[in-house]
Image 1 (tube, rainbow, N blue to C red):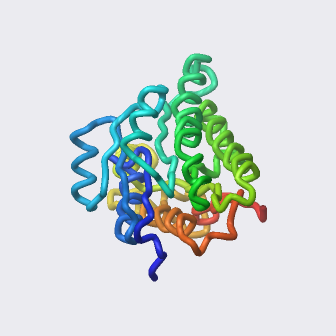
Image 2: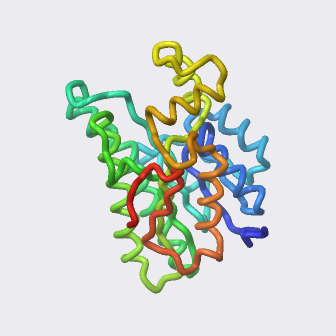
Length: 259
């Protein structure tokens, strides 16, 4: 299916590794002029070369200067995918206020910086897409990672507020909310835990049992990066012109809600 993205310029933040690579790769395959972003120049340029990207943007989005450098390198962007983010494995007892503030800066304010820098151009041209990568934990938080799940909630909230701000402009704002996604780091983590939990020795058994114990869902497995990329590509396309302020969950049914 042709998503009619040819000629659209797309910046995918945090696309030098993990989920961001899959998103950038699919958008490029659909004809978009993709700009790959990262902080490590060597790794970022390697990804850009592999997927045939049209540009590279290097910079730390957690600073005003870094975000400005990224926006300048990206140019007149039609599609902004705010994927970049990070978290430490912390709980309520060891996530300090400083950790909370740092996580918010990286996961929320970084996206706001790029919105402020790039969305005015979209408005002026009368078409654009802003897509936040959120998550089901935004509305169904667990006791763990409180500083991270709070930032997911903020990402969802700001996306809906932005949609209201962009009324009648031709620019939309939406969220893709992944469930637990099987990137390399997650597979290594689960494999290391398998002996302790009795999940088996073969990967198929480990994944099925880990999904059952950690992220029960209707599909019985972890998601794949390309499945998230597909949702992003849809929202980036003209087929989603009538979709704004929405959350598209791609979680195998992990979140039990009709809303």
